[in-house]
Length: 133
Image 1 (cartoon, helix red, strand yellow):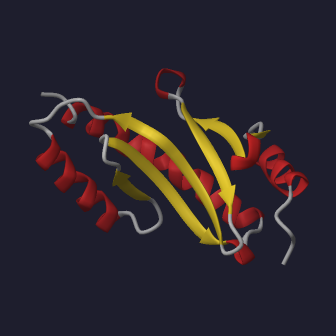
Image 2 (cartoon, rainbow, N blue to C red; image 1 turned 180 degrees about the horizontal axis):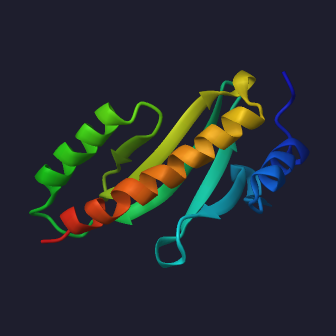
């Protein structure tokens, strides 16, 4: 297994066609999605896991929509085995893909990035619509 270094991730990102910048001690960052809904992707590494995430995907302000939105996000989690949606205490939605760090290679990088982009393309507008009172 290659060590997950700045050089390795930047090489994968360049080959994939995105710019990757260091995000302090947190990891790295890049963007995905169409210009009107472009989102920041962060990539962080622990000894066991590499974590690709978009946070917040959306900050939910409505109160009445939360039960229905919760059910919708749970349904999406069951239908999309790679990407996962979660909600924090402030109702900010997290979209993530997680892999064992030892498995990281270019194909895993592509799969994770594509999965996040596809989730935004297919589900973001529905989530935004459901997050309205």
